[in-house]
Amino acid sequence: MNSVEARLRRLISSDKDREKDAHEYSTRLRSLAEELGDDSHFASRERVFKALGDSTRLRIIKMLSLKEMCVCEVMVALGLSQPNASHHLGILERVGIVKKIRRGKWAFYKLLKPKIVALIDGEFP
Image (cartoon, rainbow, N blue to C red):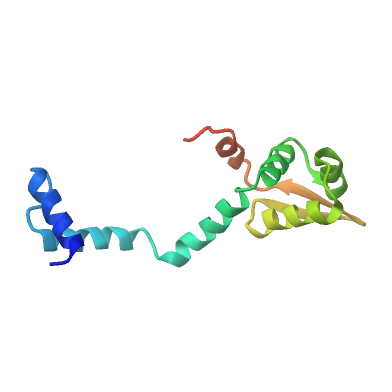
């Protein structure tokens, strides 16, 4: 018996409401994990959370929740260089949080997922 099986057996013996058979219970637990989806399912979510893991991008999202903005407006508002602003906006665009809209020579960015602002503000459903 490996250490994982031993821990599961100890859990079962200490909790009267748990399954009685450790093997059946471990099978049911693995099945539960499989129902959630495979790693590819979570990979796209991982990219979104990585994109949200930067304070500059969070500030950009908050600004875009108020109005569409072009790169130069983001640059001025946050004191960024053009390449830096474009880099952050590109990351947000690749994960589907913002969308670039071309108007002549100008590229404006618009927030595609307005509900994400509630997450940023700490308002969890």
